[in-house]
Amino acid sequence: ADLIVGVHGAGLANTIFCEPGGESGVDVTNTANMTNITKSATPHLTHARASTPAAVLEMSLPEPEFTEFSHLAEAMGLRYFQVALPSSLFESRVWVDVPAVISVARGAL
Image (cartoon, rainbow, N blue to C red; front, top):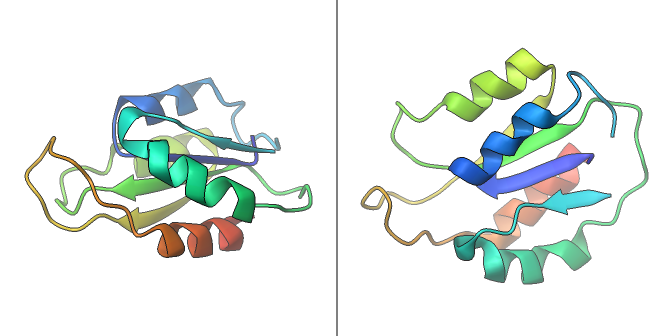
């Protein structure tokens, strides 16, 4: 995939299976919390294939200790982008700013 999109959590762990620094459509990780963003964002993410490394776009938790996926992306030679989620209790529902995600995704592509 050119762009891997997901909320911080186990779904993004599949990034480990990307080819390191690899070029790679748009793959939207569809977790239970991502159903609405998948439906809202996917039609807006049309792009031409690029010769740049694939990118990870994480909807990240605001707490500073949750940086695993930025480190994973760096170790894998992938570009990393994030949209911070609003502060909330850990492992609660997340509310995603869909226009912000679309904007960052377009920039990543």
